[in-house]
Length: 224
Image 1 (cartoon, rainbow, N blue to C red):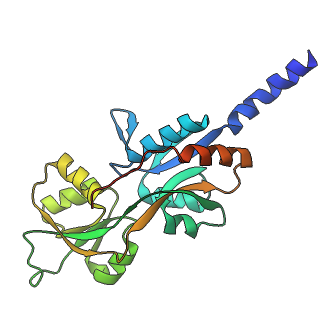
Image 2: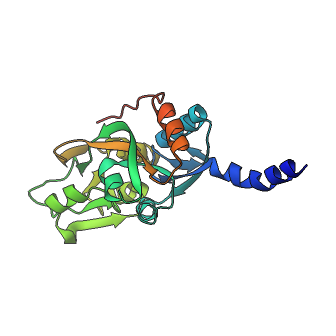
Image 3: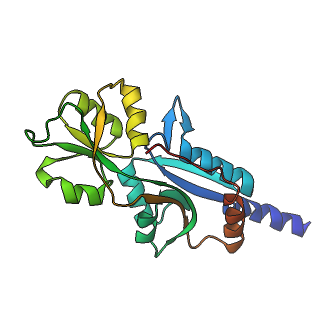
């Protein structure tokens, strides 16, 4: 009987140990909520990872800037970020698996005359850091909290361009029914690599399960 009592006391802690906190940036088409349901490329990857590993995940979607801050305080157990961001927090995190590459670019409205405009460029807060520092004057930069906001500002001509991934921009263009063509203006010299970023302090057995499961993940191919 005493053995059963001990197990019942420990069971909540054992169950909790198998539940990993997953953080995702609220950026479609990677992770977003629609009609109360979480959707997106990253959500699908994590769902497959949970199924293959037998581990239970709890999901939290953050605005992108808050997701970066969450990494700084080592809140999530798992996240998907570009490798440079994961390595920035290497005190608490490590790269588990490489997933795909993508190239941020600055896009301009096709109607813009580059020679006659002071180009006001929008970016999702915390993204496109290198590109913005190279090509956009600080006074001509507009920080937005969502890419949806940036597209609306393009429609109303408050922005002449936007920096981001084409897959993200295309998603919100379609959602906002924004039809004007956007032309690539500048891009990173090399693609950025998206990775599964995991907390170093996870139990070794959990890491082994995640690594074995990650080998079975479907390949992601993004538009460039």
